[in-house]
Image (tube, rainbow, N blue to C red; front, side, top):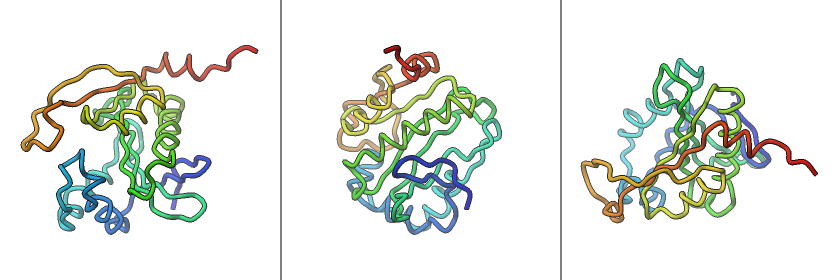
Length: 191
């Protein structure tokens, strides 16, 4: 299977239909889904008919899928998935960063490592000019990852969600990183 990206500890590869059980287990963990749907149990049919097609979608403007399965390089263990996908299928310049990892992978720096590598790939190989990421305002762990990888707070907002979940009353936040800021951060510093 073709690899998309490799970091020191993670391999990112295209998600396939064979990942359905991994995706179900990931979305069936109430803590993993706490800030997504309030921790509701997953439905295997929903994973097959709604989630998987979204994760398998090819984005013509970038020539990539936008979602990748993350595996631990040393063991091949499925860690979850990462996202860097164009918000518009016809414009690669604005890409959304996202990640969903198994609880066993939390607190080990995988989210930061994978996100940083995807951002670098987006700016160097995929014509990205702006990376954006959203989460619930109360999701402090995800917000910290966004800050560690160089994204800056842009705004708070209240989305129009069909069902409120605990914490949604505090709204959501959007972070961003522009190419110019990434280039400045990535440039070697004189000694």
